Image (cartoon, rainbow, N blue to C red; front, side, top):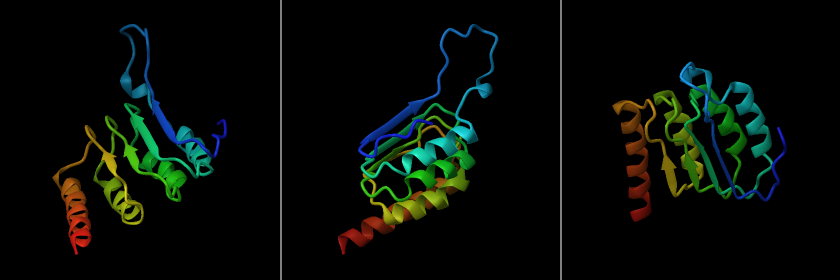
Length: 135
């Protein structure tokens, strides 16, 4: 992968297909583990990254872990958006760990495969953070 500039403020990507006709399967399109590893390697050098958005890309928990490895030391990151992917409750503990050390302004996990259990873990974390701020 092309190594992004260290001053890159935002990274947005969406895996899509155009004009493919009717004989295709959506599960053949999306971010692969190799894509995630390459992206992770590139994002490690982006010290000024403020926003990361990967939408409609069939990102699952394993792919999220690889991408997380690339942004976990991004001091300026304030937005993570991963809408319309395949994230499950398995992603939540690592996300909560990340949120504990990175006060993000926006987290978008809409239209993933989170259950009430995953949502409850996130709600508990956010409510404890709100309580800590009010003290």
